[in-house]
Length: 284
Ligand SMILES: C[S@@+](CC[C@H](N)C(=O)[O-])C[C@H]1O[C@@H](n2cnc3c(N)ncnc32)[C@H](O)[C@@H]1O
Image (cartoon, rainbow, N blue to C red; front, top):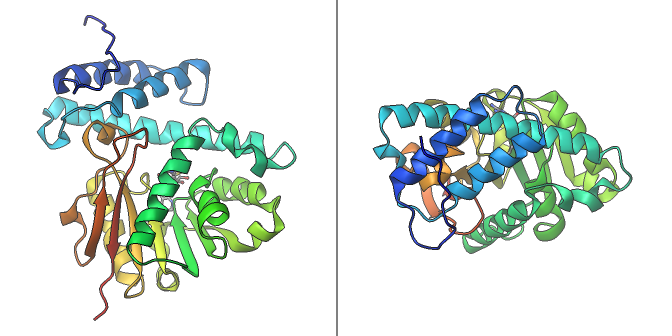
């Protein structure tokens, strides 16, 4: 297939052209020996992210079967690479003094700052002003959202971070430990979200990371499980994706959120990748 460069113009990119280019990148990424950070891996993924945030009128529901299979594979490759990137960077970070002063060196730090600002504004606009307790499910080795929220927006809130991966929690705990006040408010526990039950009823707000529940049926099961146990009147912030960004992350649609009151769905058009879906558990 001819290789072509897509200009960064603001005009819409034809969907077929974008899908062809993403398919090329998927083929290159699939052939990599490792997804751990390297010059080659980083270059391919940054090209992919740049493509997926271009203005393009693409609906993944209209994809061909072949393109749907490629998308599933690409999302998993991206999720694994993101995990490796976070683990490698977090491990490096805890080897230097004052790790919290160096978060901005993380490649996607500015995206997370923009995403946290957006998510905080959406929470404020929907009446969540000073939450006492917040849970972040799928916090990872680099819990940037919790840390940015706790230090910039919710300065007296307690964050319980849950991740299925003990290694992720160990290194995340070390990053935060360098700030005694923050460490008091930031806990990290190793649990599969599906094994959390009454605990989920303790929170005013629960964040569900985009990478928790990669397949549609898995995501719906997780949403139903959280909905069953979260306390009435509390809110759930679900990260989703739209358009070409859906080649990077799973899509959560309104009809996936049975039993919830939909408060807002926000789709970014800047360098932020995730869409933000905010729902509330109704009070009966
Ligand atoms: C790498 S982090 C990336 C978070 C990213 N910023 C996002 O919004 O998705 C995603 C984390 O979700 C965790 N995870 C995946 N499935 C999970 C589950 N069922 N329960 C708890 N954590 C899970 C993974 O271990 C991983 O560390």
